Image 1 (cartoon, helix red, strand yellow):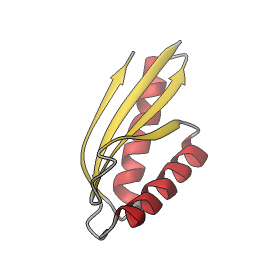
Image 2 (tube, one colour):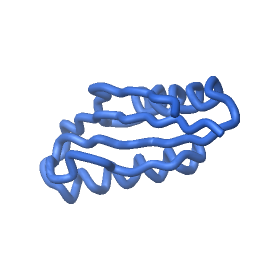
Image 3 (tube, helix red, strand yellow):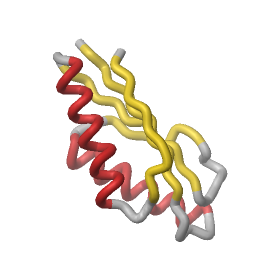
Image 4 (cartoon, one colour):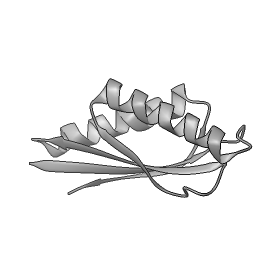
Length: 93
């Protein structure tokens, strides 16, 4: 069993409140879970209204598959969301 972990740092420039940020992040988490069947949670920067750090985990039989899934998630976030992708890292455990 292989576990892939990805940490994504996002900038949400259009948000002016924590409530608005939570709505954006919650929507993104739901879309990622439904589309990619991965585990997702906001893991840091909870009190900053223009920044979010999201953790994503995927379990697979092969390291290459877990890496491809997580890279697809990152590409989706970069293409399909109003937030700006600042940084990301992928680790295979």
